Length: 135
Image 1 (cartoon, rainbow, N blue to C red):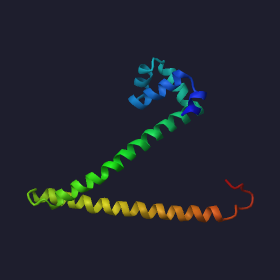
Image 2 (cartoon, one colour; image 1 turned 135 degrees about the vertical axis):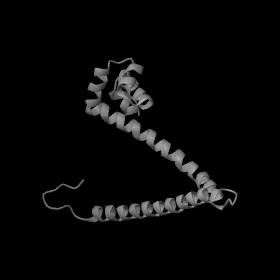
Image 3 (cartoon, one colour; image 1 turned 90 degrees about the vertical axis):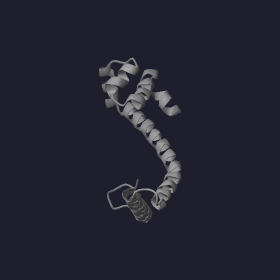
Image 4 (cartoon, rainbow, N blue to C red; image 1 turned 90 degrees about the horizontal axis):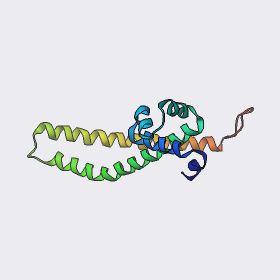
């Protein structure tokens, strides 16, 4: 973030903050006291767009971390509901189905991550084709 502060103006930083809070460019521009046309122009600049994407990525990573922390508690609650015989059968069914689907999705994601890692390892060991520069 310190690199971004060296390359962007304070007003651009304010717009990025407002974009993260308000989403819509028009509302963010108003909140940052910047003309909407200026906000749109900045959004087209490579440096600004890159800084905005980095800020959004940081927010997404933080949110994902919080969701992952809460997921253990959520799964525990789903299991409790699945086993709770006082709940209507329709609720137990829906919860049971969710538990099964989420477990399957987790397995699929783990499998895909493993396969991607294997492909990346193969690519990093393979020589670059003629005429192409290695990354």
